[in-house]
Image (cartoon, rainbow, N blue to C red; front, top):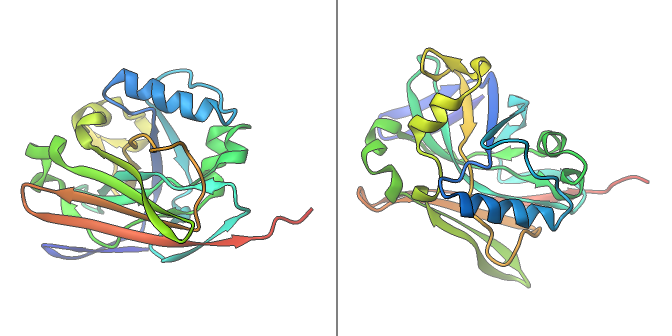
Length: 227
């Protein structure tokens, strides 16, 4: 069960479906940049773009301490669409934390291995739809005891909501929208300085028009990999 604070009050739902939009950049040059980043880690390029990876809804967590197997994972800040039990769409923030070592074996498998941290606040999509491209997405990681900028961009770099919804596979749709009790991670912006792990990951979504922001951070509790 997930609970979000919204301007309209508390929103609680039990997620039934989770999907992650991969290769969802609006600018094809940016998509190829992200593909090249992952290729350096041995990840095969996608068969088509965008792709919608399915993962267990049980991976979703709002905890601040998150257990991960080994130290080869890293986060990715993503805007996340939430469809509540009535099918109303909300916007929040999530991290597509992924095991990069396993990603070289299989992208879908690597996504299923890691928890997906989600913020505890959300906005109604209708409140930001008209200025969607102006929303700013960023993240920071911890390196050498210091916080450094890891990602920074705007949603103008990613596919817009209407395009993503139109391309959704049937299993995730109800009518022309996201099925109720479904979360969709909508893509990410490139990492600055390359993809790399960190013991802490912080992310933000800033709405400059309404002068507000969503924030979430989590600490990695690394589990030993038995040999």
